[in-house]
Length: 208
Image (tube, rainbow, N blue to C red; front, side, top):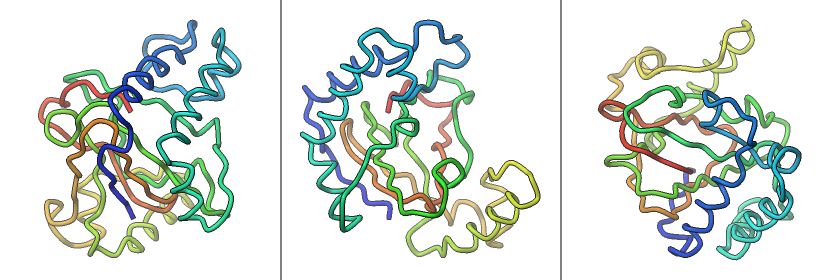
């Protein structure tokens, strides 16, 4: 992992997901928080929120994502609504960029969970993709450093320079950022190090 699958969602599904994502934002959410929301908030704070969430889940199932999850998990799968997030990156800003982290920080580490990351615009060249450790890099060294930082009470986030120090190698030799068309899926588990791709001047608008 990650597994990158191009063009899982067709253009009509992408357009519908964009519309539903915009409809999912709680109306009373402060502007500075509007870069991210989740299905649980949509259910409880948005008019017709249940219909919005139901349709988004239906689209994931129609595109085959549930089947992929069941195959990878070798069993049943469930959507964790508080963690099903819609992310917005405004152009030419770094405010919503996340440094390197593990989703285990909020998903927990006691059971396998999978993230299906779906960019709704083309990413990796002008809009930011995600950045991962290269497949040949042993991620356990990062996980050990992440656990140690979390144990000391510090926020378990790392920038590229700090990861380079962990591995004793130049940052540019450690990372890869997949170039993906809109509607693709990047699948990774809760212990996969990743970050928002750093783009010149913050990159262009992205919704995922």
